[in-house]
Length: 339
Image (cartoon, rainbow, N blue to C red; front, top):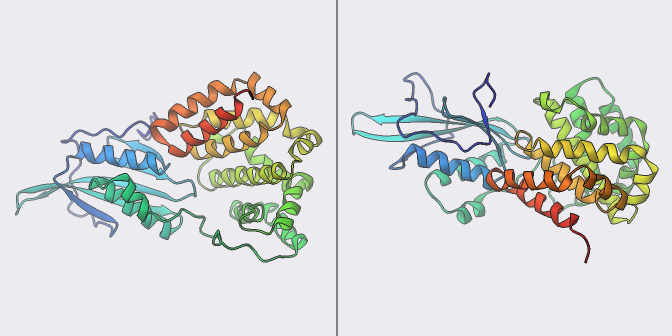
């Protein structure tokens, strides 16, 4: 528990039926709210907790204020606030569920909002899943399209200039560009390979990707710093996948010393923070899945207690984050000895 904010990380949202604050008379409600009748507040908060788990949304509960501060894997942040509604004329009571977008893609948020409200009304999980739009980065192109062939050297020069600036927002633009340029579903294969090589060979780009990942103050990062860290993990993951698909990941690891035990140790520490940084933990696990294809790194991970760490992350994911649960299982299976 964070004593300053009264936020309970990932614990189930528990509010008694008589503990909701009343709607202030001077509080204008947002359009993204709904009035839920004939459902006790305790049931509503349980349903919201469940839909957060199902959609792998990091949720930070404040039972005292009846709020949830939430963040999706693609950096949409929003707040859920509950109020007790009393209609004195009709003699009816209900619960007002207000969902406020703080940042991120408005289109994707609208799907999340609808899914939360349907959950509050008891709509089955399968029905909610059908109407939820795919969560995408705001600047990503459609996954069915591939980026037109471009001058890779010019693209990398632009990225180098962006990530080299002493401005976090400019750095974010450069890192987000790298996320797309290293994604084989969005960029032509030859260009992806060239960019992936630059991730490890270009000193400026390499340092800017690895610096957020290897930093020891991850827990104190907030806002844009958190997003930059997540983008860096995504870029690293994409580059590892590229070299793994080429059958050259072992060569890359042996060529670059920083790709060895230190990186594995840092990624495992990210996984251990899964209760407070579940999205980063998911990306770190995916990176570890790729790295476990290198025998010497698998030995390093086993000595670091990776199996125990993954079992703990699986337990957290089982209760609160479905993606974390799934990725933990994938890595646990990858660690099993080959028959």
